[in-house]
Image (cartoon, rainbow, N blue to C red):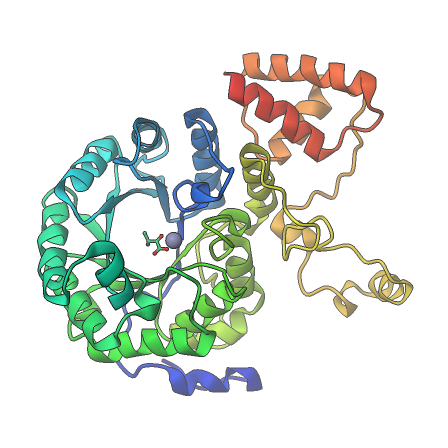
Length: 421
Ligand code: KIV
Ligand code: ZN
């Protein structure tokens, strides 16, 4: 990798592994429909999952983890339908989760059949805490099961990802052995989860570097990271991991997920975008390269956030980075004055670059069908003619009782309709 940089903040290139790193772009693996749906209270029906999957494809994610097929018939059906209608040749890879057992892997393979590009993501814990209390297995047993199940998954699909669950609290030496065995058995992505959100950024970066330096066949696999936000540092952990060779980020829209959630896609993508010059050298590029670091269409971010919030019912806090209602609002007089003179005084990115609309047409009872459908499209909803008609009737009923119809009201109207389809 190139070491020189004009920014003093980039001097941490010295942490980088000296070994070659596979991949010079960051792959975005979205797990909103799998780990995100594990948020307490965030269940989605099959139609809602399909609507989100279509929007994720428009957003440009590389891989959609569509669910855990063995977990329930509903999950199986959702993965199968997403595989069929979103997993086209030009669309994203569709992934299904499976524990390291044949029945889970069989269910995932079956559900993924219709996808042009299918991936099985299989996992087994490697931390002593999980081995002793949850799995009741020895390290030797885990070391035998992993290659056997990775090879079994590989006999069903070409693209296999393996995760050593609770990697953040696993003994690194044991982790290296398990990863080496998983890659030798055919895993083309190895994903390092900080399952309980315990690891600090410098530690997580060092863990990724350790994997690069110590797993002999690491050049045959992409290193991915997965993390939870229990201590609020999941995104920081991932960015440290990118600096040390991670090339796939597993994340969710609005950071939803188990407990405190997963690393938030919008924060990762905009960090890589806004601070491209900082990250370029870590990807072996010239500091001033303008080539995007990932394939995401940033202008689709806000619509995707609204869609996920409306369909899951999980509100986005107003001060949430990138997609919160206040993310681009300026309250104090000094800030307003500065921004009016030149936006650069208090804005590091343009609201439009993440898809906030310039157009502030207020919808009310006098609004027509055109304004209504345009705003729905801006918010990421794709409705059929019949669905639009029903939603428009409902909109008029609500508008008769409420003067201004906000995006949140629109979301509620459409979510009710999608639920009843
Ligand atoms: O958090 C975790 O460890 C997971 C795995 C299944 C990757 O979600
Ligand atoms: Zn997780």
